[in-house]
Length: 315
Length: 315
Image 1 (cartoon, rainbow over the protein chains, first blue to last red):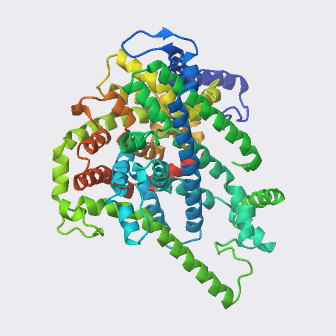
Image 2: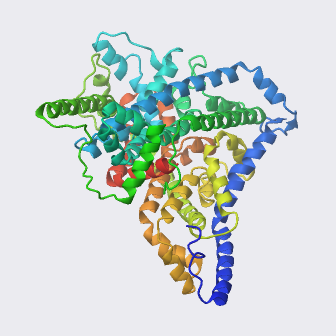
Image 3: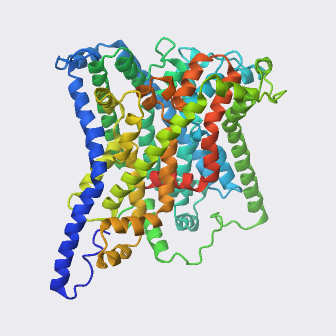
């Protein structure tokens, strides 16, 4: 598509070439001009702050006072900071629970909805609806659902004669509770999976059937390989998203009980904006940045082994 | 592995002759005979059973939300929980929404919405036009760099951005929440640029060429040819920007401190902090914050699904 103009057959060469070069100068000028707001925004609101936060991370700086350069001391302090390790393990725990759960639920439901069910759009709406709930409203609702005395979950469990739980008020149950809550929003992954499934060419399934393959073979040798790019996309965005949860910790648990839900960003927020230790919080931010880079890099490297991308001619 | 390769060949062949008598019949192996049909209808029945079983826990929180929003305190705390409010306590809504100035919060949110949407649509679409339809050196590199910022954890830019707005004296105004939108949407704007660019690429390039030969400027091509043809994509961007602002919590939390300036999300969180045990009020307020988004979804469902899949599949 880049060569829409230049590929035209060359008639009246000289005049056209001169006009083309005028045209490409025009496109260069306008092209940069029109992309300029976005480029400036990237410099001012992304690259600039990113570099600045690295420099902040090398200082001892409480807001109001002037920053003092201390080299890598913040990072050294992090290494011995119990809360840092705690927040890292809590966040990892949450990610390892929430991401697979959401992916599996989304994938299974998408597979079912792809079986030419009646009223597809109604089913899709039902399952997609929870993802529309603003996260603060969702948090308020789930505090009430998790309420140990009169909440929905314990009421139902009690009626069924099953043991109840303290949910977000218990040190051991708080992260699993938040994982359950996150699984309520699997609809987004499901819609993406469903669109992916609908894009699998029907002929592939017929080819398997002609070769005598059954439902399992169709799933194993067509659906799964064709869906790996979509699975990979949902996996990467899921991991990056869950690593940065904040709202639930802020509204529902304040990181408690006993720091059992001290999510990484919540710890960072507290360090920066409650204790106003901007330097130390910036070091936390950079460590998170590097963790996410490493994890994404590993996911991409690992992807080569199992993600199937169509060769040339995909368009 | 071999099956994958076969698959792609099958696909290529299918692409060449898409109308080779392939009707959309269920891809079952050899399915003749009443027994096979009977087995298949049993299988279909199971699909519906699972879909219904999955829909119950998905919808239950909504039922719990609505029934609690309409109950008075006597009924809400009855031990085996009741499901039908008796009487319908509509005063929860008026009570909750006047207990704190939710009207003011709504107006604040809408002010931020208007500026953010205008800025995002304007600057993202001109950037997308430049990346999709103007040829200039370094274009693809610039676009790739912009796109890579999607992976960036927002925490790494958070503190310096905050310090910047603080230095500029913009705290407790809407400036930090709206101005970045005029620079390519900042942060989430990259998705908008990506989505618009994908859409712009599908518009025939001959239209531009014809206009350029008539001496049009790129701006004229953008404004009179590309934009009018891109309404669906722009609607998707407007919807997702609207939802992003509506749900944003961390931004308002950082930048707005005077209660007069609160947004709905921030107001709801502070409401929750004050009326901790007034579940009728809390659920009514939450329902009021959720309802506009759900209503928007039902009116513009097509665009929602399109938007989710567009960003998901092409990634």
